[in-house]
Length: 230
Image (tube, rainbow, N blue to C red; front, side):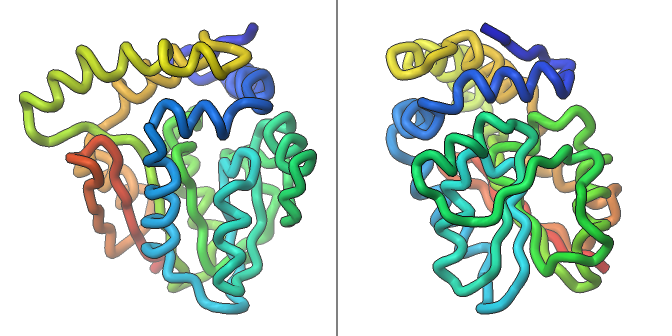
């Protein structure tokens, strides 16, 4: 089975997610002890979508979040680099527009969306800052971005326990419900290597977004970042 490395070669990342698509949503719920649902709800609240808004849900996986966002009355597109993920979403009846897309070269016109969001996918892009610039390209002036992603706990003793004890356990939790347990070893490694909240905010600002703000969730294990395109 394919296992991506921290160099995040796009083909390896796509093939890895293709291989875990069938059990991906279930594995996420097991690994997060059900918190994945709560994080999606908090992301939806941060998005504050309005009826008729055009929303790009990037790295949408099986479109589980995309379907939930449509409840606001917004028009939402699920985009992902993994065809296996999108096909799994269609197979289980997630009836939203789906587009195969590379975050480095999105197949959308300039200013095509009012909102762009990524939930637990930004850290899998080969170039974080470049992908954030590309997201800004397809969002109109004044449009919004919300990122929900893993982070680094700010309280040092808890961060130590999280990195030394919490992250190594994740692949073990996923093993009984995943078709490719090695993929979750990569996911745990990528979580450990990901920057903290302020560092990610600085990357977002360098990519051209303004009004960057963040909110830690669950003691900083996860964080929401919000920004506006000038």
